[in-house]
Image (cartoon, rainbow, N blue to C red; front, side, top):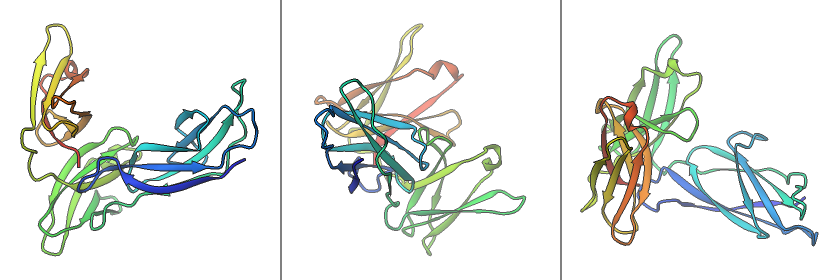
Length: 249
């Protein structure tokens, strides 16, 4: 059994208000000479691990794509030469708070809709996203904070879900210079979206059918030529679909 230690969390996309971050875990190596690697398990409930990473004989790992405001639980097992694993280590947990000044609180009135209160910088616009699985996040609305730095948003669809989780972040004020999105529809094939912009930058791609609800369907990191393709494999499922892209915060 060995101890996992949590090091500082750093932004996954170092910008203004990143929606996700990465975390570095470190541990004491096993004293057994038979250990050939380690198996990291993690999830959003204690003792229930929905994700895992198989590692070599190392003593640290960086886990990307963690949502802010969510508690993650981690445990580790050593791997022997026959592939068998040791008992799990002690569990460690971590929660990266939402950026300072950006907060969302939920108030559920008895028999009424769910009201979300966003607090942050006065005059700023914030997007509100919802999820049921912490994988697919849907933009369900935007709010502009009043002079007191607060604004309410009513999720009229909350009762349709057994459970729903929320996050908020500041909306990019404008697209980065040179950020463009082009579509190529191949007859009988999927729809390919080409994002052009600054080399090395990461861009989110969103889709909508009504220009009200926008869903993040993927991200791309632009290559040395300042371009990257994304295939919307679900495009054929919709009678019409519209897209937009912006640099990940």
